[in-house]
Image (cartoon, rainbow, N blue to C red; front, side, top):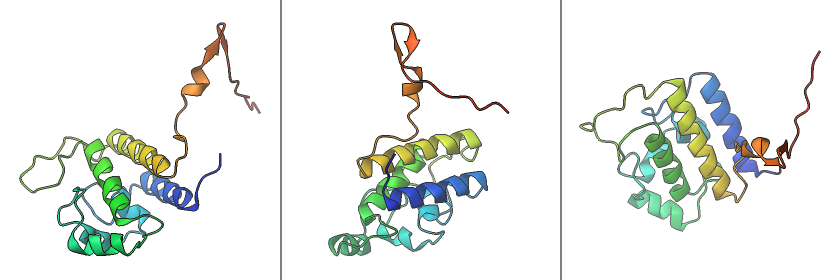
Length: 153
């Protein structure tokens, strides 16, 4: 499957973050966007509220100038973060008085958040969702449409 450079780079960073336990929803350098943007926190100035889709003045200026951050516009960055936080069970925008979800740092919760982010990233680039494995279970006349080869040693 052909992907874009920005999608491939984001997937690699998110994959490594997940497997190295560096994916943390409440840390702006280690959340989905923080990892995509090389663990920098300067992106947090694109909005006044973490998890909001509303661009701040700084965010609007960057958006209007057509600036990209590792290939993503300010508005796309806010969408990625909102999807990640929502999928991890947070109420967005984040606020200190909102209750935190239980187990928001469990591997299952982070994996689900990651899958939603990847689905969004694929949609941004008009690429079919790369984690869709439903085709493996398609049948025609009771027989699988697609076959997997096994490699037994």
